[in-house]
Length: 225
Image 1 (cartoon, rainbow, N blue to C red):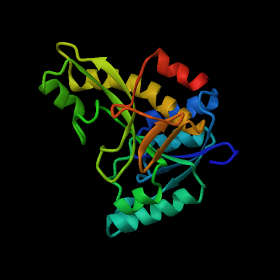
Image 2: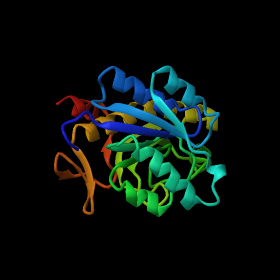
Image 3: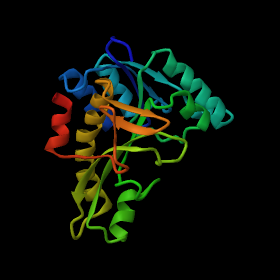
């Protein structure tokens, strides 16, 4: 990245609660970046109204208008690139991206997933954690690669699974930590401290462990050094 304020493009499909957390973090200075646009594959995504209310440019690329994933992803990439992003952020974007799209933005796409990856990639993560009898669950921010939910983990946060938890109660607990760790990861990227290349993910030039950073007050302090 050059010396300009890093530009962020956020992709959503629904309410965009993580998008809202990122917008707030940019507004209050927790992220040294600017959201240039919010793009959705659904015109009725509620998060688009939130973005418009914050004065953010919005675009819709309806996946149903395209014959296949490749053509959709090509159109999506064109919309994104018009905003010259330094980082593309998936925030509840419910489309599987093609390898061509991922390669186009290699090292510049992040996602957040509601499990402690590599556990439970894909859907129904909270149900799977409860059914497995896990004592803890959580969320992971990771760089996006061509493997579904398989890219290198940047940071994870853990929450307890309580006796009697439902999918909804556990999801609510996990969502709260999602809203903490996603801004942290984006800020480290915007500061130029977090990078991904062919050798892996690095923070301040040092390799991150395979499990990434563990969310704690220490990880919060990483962003204000």
